[in-house]
Length: 177
Image 1 (cartoon, rainbow, N blue to C red):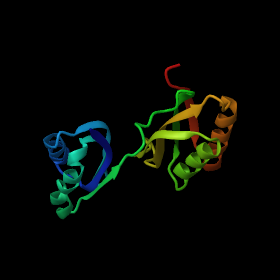
Image 2 (cartoon, one colour; image 1 turned 120 degrees about the vertical axis):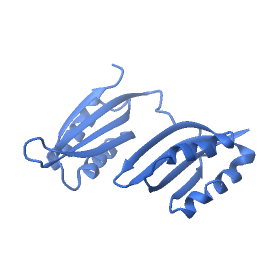
Image 3 (cartoon, helix red, strand yellow; image 1 turned 180 degrees about the horizontal axis):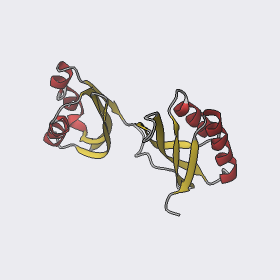
Image 4 (cartoon, rainbow, N blue to C red; image 1 turned 90 degrees about the horizontal axis):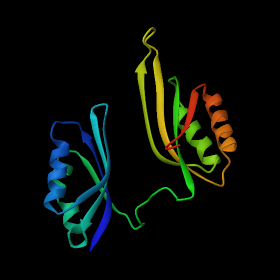
């Protein structure tokens, strides 16, 4: 019997960290089902859903003690729920947000989606300098699952209102349409 855990690791970025983590997982007969990894400043972050033989669950946690000793923060959480997927009675949308970078953009967009009853499936943000002035430009790419019983005009209007509050442009595209 297998169990699923959510594995997170954060710590100093260095060459070989993904290989080292994946080697431990393979050595314990684990399977990486879903993952996200990114370098954020000088830190590296790993987020994975990992299927592990139930009898090796306790061994898995101890297998990363050496990385904890090197300053990495490792966390394993048992995933009691079935594999999370967007509800069958929903549609997927990609939301692109762009504008001048400033505090509060992520919060306002997330609040607008939450108020509309929309679940965020994934979100990626970043900044880059404007080609002419060098002013930081913000970008956000969000995938959401919108229940079919929520009218597109309603949630998109709520989202656009949130965008207006923080002065950003928003583009909404149905995925797979």
